[in-house]
Structure formats: C-alpha cells, structure tokens
Image (cartoon, rainbow, N blue to C red; front, side):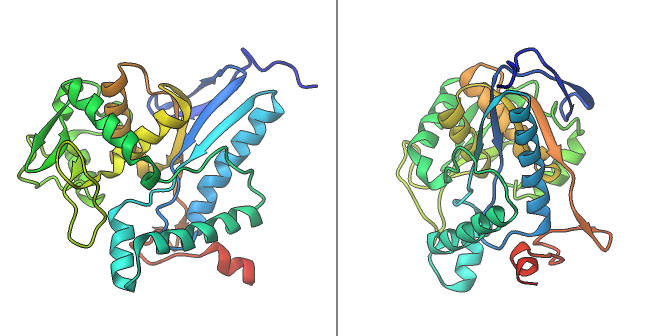
Amino acid sequence: MPQTARGRAMRLHDTARGAIVDFRPDDHVLMYTCGITPYDATHLGHAATFLAYDVLQRRLIDRGHTVTCVRNVTDVDDPLFAKARQLGIHYLDLAAGEEARFEADMEALNALPVASAPRASSAIPDIRGFIGMVLDSGHAYLSGGAVYFDVGSFERFGQISGYDRDEMLRLAAIHGGKPDDPNKRDPLDFVLWQPSAEDEPSWQSLWGPGRPGWHVECSALALRELGTTIDLHGGGTDLIFPHHECERAQSEAATGEPFVRHWMHVGMVRKDGEKMSKSLGNLVFVDQLRKE
C-alpha cells in the first residue's frame, strides 16, 4: 500500500510566483485543466498539454495521492459558433462530434480518464448564479445590455501573468477581449454576460437574454465541480492572459477566498518556428497520425 502523501512536496513551476516551488497538497488533490473548444480535431499542441497533466496525475497517484481532475468542454464560445455557421450545422452537433473525436484521441494516447468533463452549456444556471455573486460583491456592472467585470475593483489583477497594461491590452485584443468596446469603463474590463447574435444560443437572465462570456464558464464549473479553492489549475501558456487572469479575479471576487494554490502552464508546441495553432493553420492532427 502507498504511504500517506500528506506533507510530501513535489517541485513544480508556479506561473504566478515565476519560480519552481514546493507543491505540497493534502492526500486528495483537486485539479482543474482547461479543455477544448470543440470545433476542430485534436492537434499535437492539445495532446502535449493534456498529456503533461496526465503525467502529473500519474506521479501524484504514485506518491499516494488521490486526484480529482476536472477538464471542461467550452461548447459556448465564439470560435465554435463561427465554425458551425460556416458549415451550416447546429453548434451542439459540431461540438458533440469533435468532443467524441477528442476523447478517442485521448484514449488512443492512453491518457487517464478525468473525473468529469463538464460542458459549459450544462452550467447556465450555475453561471447565472455566479454572475449574481460577482455583481453583489461590487466587482461587476451592467452596461449596454451586458455585464462586465470591473478590473479596477480588483487590485490583484495582473499578478498571475505579471504583464504590464500594454501587453494585457495587446493580448486581450488578440483573444477576443474587445478592448475598444464602448460599453466598458476600462478597455481591460471583460464580459460576464452578453446579448447573443441572432444565430447564437440565448438564455434568459436577470440582465436580459443572452449568453455567458468565455472566462466565467470555467469559474462557475470549477466552483460547481471542485469547490471554492483548487490545489492546481492548468492549461497552455496561451491561457495565462486573459483567460486565467480573468478567471482568478472573478472567482475571488465572487467567493472572497483564494481560487488556486498553484498555477501550472504547459509551453506551446511549435512547427517550423511558429506556435501550432488553428489561427495559423499549421496543425498536425492526432487522428491523422493515428491513421498513418
């Protein structure tokens, strides 16, 4: 039988602290990793990221821990809607097919099954309740039919990435943060709830019909599945800002408790000197390699 894991440290890089530090969780480790937006197949960048957390889970289990790992599916998001629109199919049909392909790829790569893989679309009541908590805490405001997080109200905003304001604005523009949105008090404020376009899904809320923003989905799912504070939160380095920075801010604003004890990120896979990404089109897909 394995020895109790309590008090035994691993050495892991922590993004927020910018250093390799002790990771010393209790016997039961709560882990959340940001999963796929299911509008295309799994490429090697995805595989490298999820296998890194798979190795971490295995090592924790070897050391006597039990691990609850949650990996979400972002099935309410702009890229998914755009791809479904292009193909002329329902966004959930596209998501279901790509999620099944992803799961088959992970199984072929012998990855451990995660404890749960909740979809954002399953959590609309949780998301609405979470947004209400942020509004009640005074960290969000209504403007132009949307609800925004007020980054100026959260003094620790930017402490995960360590980026200056100019870099945060640059990355927000690249990742759909819309710094030029005239309804915002500050260009770095981010949306929690927004009106839906005509061909996008829409749910009723206290702030009008619409849909959640990208960042709030993970906070609501993490709170629902794992509770207030997570031992380790992970993803690729492309999620440090804005996604994880925004997640941390809104989660701690809502609960008043620390959101994550240890932030771990996996570097990007590169091909021909460029980051492998859907936007650049330089992808190598796992299911193609499996056939070859």
